[in-house]
Structures are given as structure tokens and as C-alpha cells.
Length: 520
View (spheres, helix red, strand yellow):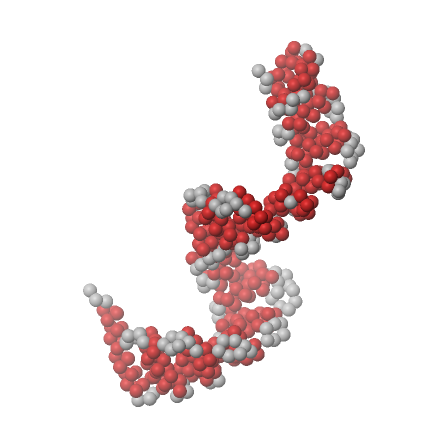
């Protein structure tokens, strides 16, 4: 059945079109403008931009400011007429000088951007000011930005906030967001004040509820991290989702992270992959690097080193240190790309210069003449393997930079983080008095730390200390057990020590020691 409401509307437009057309043909400017509007929107007549321009031009030439504005829009967009920004400026100026706020706003933009006319920040400010005083929220916002940035006028945060507030109170989302940022930073005025979290969240929420994606992302982030709002992953997903559906890449990426980790919600690898792809397609470097990792390791997708390399390269070229390092690894190994160790080093260096720990460490291992520099960079970031390797370099006679005391400090930093090799190195130093005062109890402590992590030489030395009572009370059972572990790990001298200890033990004690050591 035909839609009677639609038929009635079409008939109404047709009758109205005929009435307006008759007036327009008699030279009534307002009718000429209305007829142009009908042709633009296809109301009562097939849509025809060229005829719309013709009728707008007639009304504009008669001095009708609204028609002058609409004709300017047509020239600016190239709609129904070849794009001509100079003509747009001309017609906006005609309407603006008659006080038409929308034309004043558009004219301000063209002056600000230097489109169709030489850029002139003072003229931009003049026309934005005219429109703003008439209550145009877009112009009010732009004035706020100019005062905030000091563009065309002395920087004045008080005036900026005043204009933002006037637009925000008209529900202009961009100004609501800008106002929220000012309250969040404490820069509501020219003087730094304490943050006003409640006001910040109030305006973020106002803008977010109008669909402004940056504000939605901001709210999502606060719920996600529990920053100024109670942590709530479901609300974070709600706001990230609304922004993500609008194409906000950071929201898409953060949604993917939530679904990937299952933080506060059920883990969903498929949804995570969906959002990583969305963000990566828009150029989000973190998402591109993440997709590269998935293709490299076959996580949720078929393993494909070539595709991994493509995603890594996209992110690496944007400066992502993680992607630069990962791309370097593929080039180093020749996975998915021709092997190229020189190019791999270039990417490692780019990542290392941005502070990427593993890249700094890998560069140090590959470049002997730069090893000290890169190990120190990574060590300064508390990377225990680099701290240990720095200690090794400072301990070696062939580096030209021997410094036992400094070596000890780096070993200690690594050892305190549980690095077994560093713990063993400290045990040796205290055992031999190298660079520190000899201290068998300290040696026993650090050997024990390393031995418990499976360090075979530490297990052997610990067994010897228990056997002789050096740094610890003599305990043949403990000695026997630790030496057995060292022997099982391939420390050859442990066998003769075990035999000597066994010979000193009564049969009952030996049986106890065998049971403790797990020997059949």
C-alpha cells in the first residue's frame, strides 16, 4: 500500500513549489531564495543544484542576505557550480556586512585559513567577534581558541574561558570539552588554580552525551583507569564504544586492550582483534604493532611473518619504538622479509634512541664499541640483564674502563631484582674479597639466592660452604643436597666432593641426606 503520509507531503511540496515559483518569477527575492532551497533539498521538485544556484543568485543580487550566504556555501562546496573560494568570500562578505551571523562565521574561517583570500588573523577575529556577539556558538568557540593560543590577540585565558563558557552553555560540545580541559588542568583563568574535577567531569559528560568523540574517550579512559571516577570497565566500554563507532582510533585501541586482557569484563579475543583492526586501519601505531605481534605469533590469526612485517613497518614509520624493535627482529632473522642485519640495526637504533629497553640491550650485544653506552641506557631504566652486563664490562680488564666498585653497584641493583647471574657474581665477590671486604656470610646469602633459582655453580659453592662451615653453620646434609643438584646440572667437581662428604657420614645420616637430596 502507498504511504499516505508521504503522498500527502509530496502533494504539499508540489503545491507549495508551484506557489513559490510563481512568486519567484515575479521577482520576489524571498520566493527566489525559497525556490533555490527547494531545488537544493528536492522538496516538491527533483533535486537540482544548478537551478538552486541560479535562483539563489537572483535573490542574492537583490540583496537578500540569507541568499547571499547560501550562494557563498554553494561556491565554497562547489555544489551546482565550480568551486570558487574567492566567490564564496565575496558573497559571505555581502551577507556578513548585513549582519548575517552564519556568513560572518564562515568568512572568519576563510580569513583564518587563507582560503579564497589572503590569510588575515585580525579579519578572522573581527568576523568571529561579530558572529559571537550575536550568539553564534561556533564563533564563540573559535574566539576562545584564539584567546587561548594568543592568535591575533594577546593570550588571555580569562577571555578564552569566558567565550568557551558562553558557547558551552548553548550546548556546543567542542566548547564543553575545552572548558572541561581547563578545569581538569587547573587553568580556568590566567592564574594556575587547583583542579576542579567535578566541573571537569560535568563538562566532559555534557559533551560526551552529545556524541563528541574526544569527550567520550576521555570519560571512557577515566572509568577504565579509575581516575577521578570509580573504576568501571563496563562504563569504560560504553564510552569507548560510542567514540569507537564514530571512528575514534584511540577509543578503538583501548576497547581492544580491554577485551584482550579481560580487565573487568569477560575476555573476548575476537572482539579485541576486531577493534585492533579498526584502529590499525586508521593508522593507530599501537594497534598496528599489536596486529604485527598477532600475525608474527599466530595469535587469533594464521601465522604470517610477511603481514606481520607490513604492520610493524606501518607503525615503525610513525615512530613506534616497539614496532621498530619488532621489525628489526624480523629483518635480523629474515622472517617474512629478506634478511638484512644492517637494516635491522637501523631499526634497533631508532627504537633504542627512544628508550626501548630490549632494543638498547640488543644493540649493546651486537655493537662492541657501543656496548657500554647502550647497556648503561638500559641499566638506568632498571633493566636487570643490562645492569648485570654493565657490571661485567666494568669488571673486565680489556674494556679500558675497569671499575670494580661501580661493577659491584650494578651487580647489586640487578641482584636485588632477582637476577641469578648477578647474585652469583656478588657471592663470588664477597667470597674472594674482590672490590669489597671479604664476607663469607654475605657470600653464602647471595649464593643461596642464585642457587634457589637453579644456578649450578652457586649450588656447588653453597655445598662447599655447608661442608666446611664457611659463612654458615656446618651441615653435611645441606652440603650433600646442594652438591647433588650441582652435579646433576653438570658441575663435574661436585662428584668427588659428594664422595668425600659421604665418607664422613654415619649410615643413618647418609640415608637422611639421600632422602633430602632425592637420591634413590
